[in-house]
Image 1 (tube, rainbow, N blue to C red):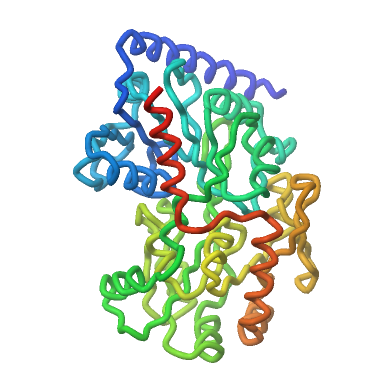
Image 2: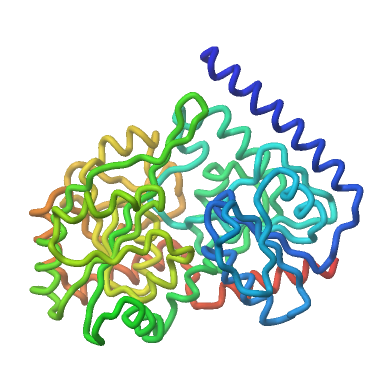
Length: 418
């Protein structure tokens, strides 16, 4: 291990020890049985992802539940029944130490201490996907990342999942050997069934006509670290968006618009990156806390390696994979969950090392350049696509029926009674 990494580990362990002392002091106060504390993406985002839909369901059932949301930016908007608190060590320790239930979609700070009478529901922020996580990353999974993951996973009581695929991948992916709740992904409840209302709201919000059609471009979130400093990767995408929109209009008809969802820290670069690629107005939803209400209004999706491809596919909207750096990406991640290769025409199956009991084929076309993307759009066959999706959903043991939030709330309420 490099000397700099040893010093960084020592530094983080020292901070964690101090954090544990703060939690220990706060544990002198009683646990409040009706209190639920929520956090998403280490406090970086607001009312969104899986926790949002669980909280909405719990509040609908019982208005006396007390919800506290830990957030970095207290200007974020929340429903009135949720109390927002600044996400720092002292606030976090106090709120978490006195809550009966924790709900999170990411990792708790290293040094967090849970009490025996408390329950921690981990909803994670991705289910069936492309990116390898945890121990599946091999040497790309740093010693510090392992310590943080193991510390957090040891506190978890339940992880919500939506498939048998997750049940097989998550033990090493999350460094977790506890209990799973195969209930579905709560954030995908909004994608189930008739999505006309979400589409209407979106069109009105952006002043689009009733016949407008929208494709979302949502590349995967890329983040790394060097000497302990985490950074968000910026990149220039090679997709010819103008050409893509014209091909969508040629294949599906109507007037198509581009909706973009990139990391909020990169959204300031949106104009300089996208304007040269298309003369059309770009709809930027990068700073929306809830991606899934937006996704419910879409007619199609294009991404590289984001798990949103799978979520969008559950609606049976057209999904196109544009991956122009497959070899580089696999090298960076350490491994990948599907057998992607430089041969775009190859059948893509799941990585059997990670999901040995699954026999699944990726239902989406993969393009590595604009010529392949044009071909895949113009030759899109709805009937063949629907059949591939049905086979895929069966193979991975998918749960998608719009009731994930209800089932998770059932289990939370059961825990609150103990």
